[in-house]
Length: 223
Image (tube, rainbow, N blue to C red; front, side):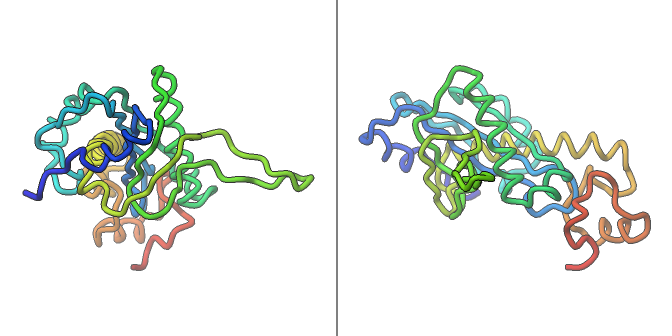
């Protein structure tokens, strides 16, 4: 198994006056069907205990993720998962859908009474902060959403425990959703492929056409 993620990187924010740090990660970005999902796991930087066995969700077997999910929720000061549907991905684009899903999770965290001081986001692009939209009168109108400072880090899910924990939450919840959708459209094998682009998945799309849960703005039939 890979080297365990720690809270060493998160601790760098303590001297800057932060107390609550929100680790954020997404799953489902590259799928052909189903939602994109964003997990948030908040840690208290003043009392941080490690959580054994947590890794980036892609490195864990399904049974391990299922076992760890309730442990992550109990370990976190607050946690949430937000989703954006295939239709929203088609309408907003993947970055807009990630922002939508992430801020749904963000407002759930706020609703639990926790206001994170800082966000640690996996990757190199901040898709979480609200985008400034010009109004009809050329004024800048900001969407409502995450207003905490967002720090991005490539491969944060591999080295930062808060982000790895968020990835587990998002993966487990999205997998459950895909298993439910599989009952509605069993031919597509979403219980196994979770909406990703396998050859068998593409073959059924070619034969039967897309479902309402497919991202029809994407090129579904070619690599």
